Length: 320
Image (tube, rainbow, N blue to C red; front, top):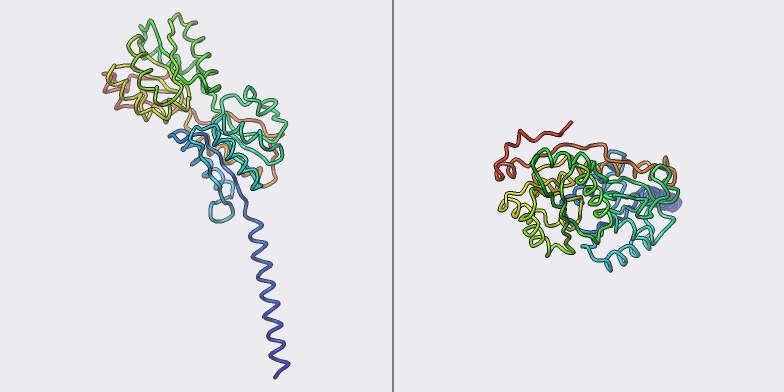
């Protein structure tokens, strides 16, 4: 009897050890992803949501085999630095930088952990990659460079007799300046005068929009984080002054613009998540994975805004 009890205890011990080993193995299969977002607004929030959808499509579902450490810097440079340090110190399997400042901050902290980026207009100019075709380091992902010419053509088709078009953005955002300069070039080539005003913070947006709207026939806003964060304020001014606004992204238009042929940030984030899943699988490396442009661009018209401006929403078409 004593021998049987001893044998039973030994068997139970072995089973217990076996179970512990299995639990440890399952734990090692769970990937960790650190996420840094520069500020909270509709477009970037949509990119984060889409990223998780893309990862799930690639086989990584939150709560099953991937965990997220999400940090939002609320547009504060000190927060970007400290949050980047924290995320890198935890040694996740992958990092996600949402918008240029976040991507740059993460890249400054590590050259070893794979980084995917999204909502970054020019990864080369931001010194995140050597080239879009061959990144060459630990960074890859998606660019949100929009079709500037098509967006300007759209705006000019809405206000065909426009003499002056305004451009608004935050001059401190390098991605916004790139787009604003391209838009100004397109407008001047079309023979239209340009007036540019900038806002340093969301607190300046209402004043800048009101001031600019008085002097122009229409306004163009690139995919700018400051103006995206205050898109509803822009929309209120647009209604009051009857000013057509073409913005860089779908979300900006839905919140306070008239129309765009632009990026759906949720779709862009999903595209990024699919890329990230391949990296986590070991099937791809950032150094040899080309930066991708948005697959899904679409004409979006804010019907409520169009009606407020006295414009037939069905009359807004993308020029050929």
